[in-house]
Length: 194
Image (cartoon, rainbow, N blue to C red; front, side, top):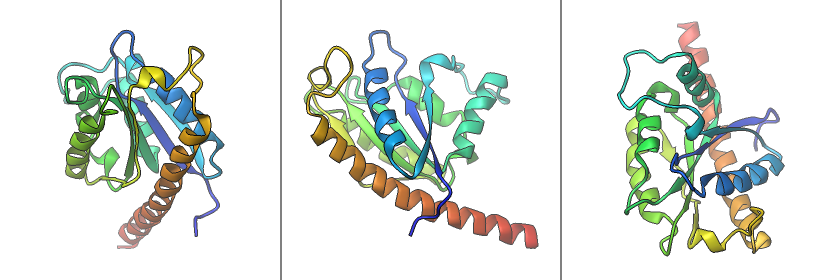
């Protein structure tokens, strides 16, 4: 059974490309997550962070805010496009610039693209996150031919189908987020008592 205090969910828009569909997909998902009874949602758009192209020794104030958001999150959802059979460099930099902030967190993936729906990018992320001691959950969402999924106002053309997919992913993410938060708190309590 889930605890009664809300779970903090960071939703990252992983593309910074001009003309991107990321904000449309992320806005839809943030709306679904905000309607879920378990989550408090923290949207993060990488295009607004201006992350450095190099890996700095120390983060500046803007980047420390990003790190604090991921550190405070109980779960993370990455909204990722597939560009040339992979995920964007902006997302790789956003992942690599942090370390312990990802530790023991469940990661959900909402991918989008052309015919494949971004699944190649999603599968690559499933290889990356375990290196940070984070785990990707089984349930994911892949939006094929994303330009046809939403209308000009950003509304899904098949809202019930997408809502069901989001609910399934969010329910699984909530279970893992609650379990891992409890485990992290137990570890912290044990460390403080030592």
